[in-house]
Image (cartoon, rainbow, N blue to C red; front, side):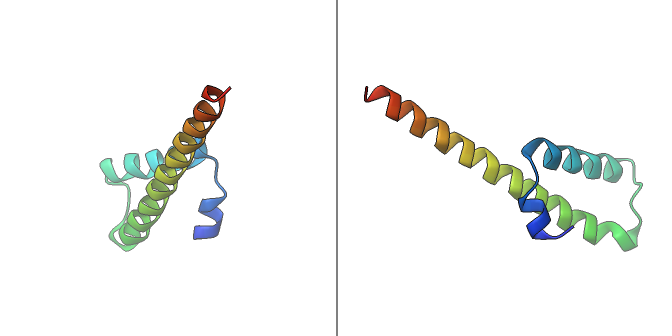
Length: 70
């Protein structure tokens, strides 16, 4: 999955993919050959989720500040 594809994911989808990777790693279902790729993907997904949360938080603060001005 490319960074562009990840950037277009909805938060819930990215979080679900991240959980799936985490579960596979915990159950040791990832081969050594795939480990690096899965960890890189998990990192990209985690960063995407963090960015979505920050963006949502900023938008909510903006809305609350705008409504407070009325």
